Image (tube, rainbow, N blue to C red; front, side):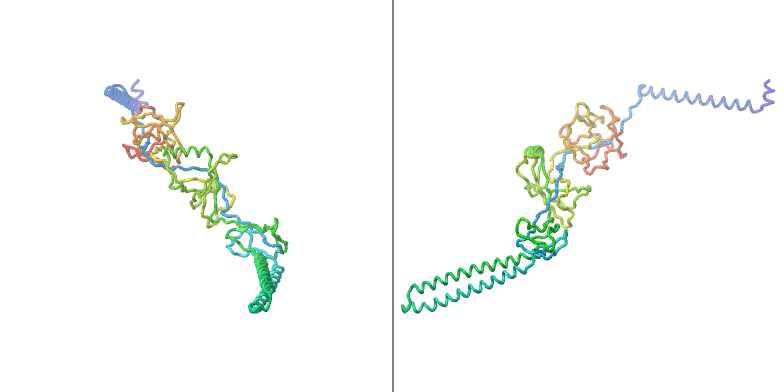
Length: 418
């Protein structure tokens, strides 16, 4: 039979032999690996080697942290001046463009001067008449004086001449006052800008009769360089800050000269920093807030009255403060906690008390000390007591990074928190 099979399929025996040889080799290899594994287990006592987990850490340190306070504010003109008619007359023309910037002294309106010029002329004529009466009285007195010395005239006649001069002098002074008032009224017909600023809408048109009464308002001028920003602080925040100040938990600038930053409605930061220049000393009973005001230079008229802005007070600092990234702080039913690396290189859970946020960091009020190594990334995959391998944490998103680096850095990239 064997000869027949070989005769009909001469490669069958050779292929069968090759397959059997491959199976045998695989079996031997498997046994060898199994034996090596057993040998290793025997060398380690039968337990697998625990791999240290790689985590990104920071070494915390005390530092001075800026203290900011944010609230909503509203812009207000530095000065709002009402332009009113001081005399009654016909408005001849408006000499400005509504909404334009005018300089102090620029002509805004002109009232018909004709009746007022006539009044000035009449007053001048009356002054001349009164001056003539005074001059006549002087001549009378000078004529009577030598005659009185020679007793050629009665004392009463001389006294009457003196009294006439006094009356004429008083009438002259009255006439001069009337002339001065007439000239003032004439000057009032030219209405000029008392300050530099932006003009408002004209409330009277050319040809209108204007008066010095209750309907005398012609327009307004708004001075907006500099410009004010009004904002309020709650009495609760005031008390909190006062307590921190008394306990020296925060330090404020000398003489309370805080810097004030504005965030506009489009999210942009106003390029010029303002100064706090007024703070109300009492609480508004209706709102429970204290009013404050800051002053800003506004040469390009970026700010206009009645804009809503975000106000940030800057200048105070919180000394000896420890910061950690927010992602390093976790919360349980017992409270907030972080993982720290102990001297044995193991993860240790530490309960902490947290305060305010500073950028992407959290203020740690208690629970950590300078020099503690805090795990920032990799906390999800570790347990208390786990052996860890540290690499320095690099914050690529926060504008306010926490302090310092980690010891024993291997130079590998920081691990993600996963």
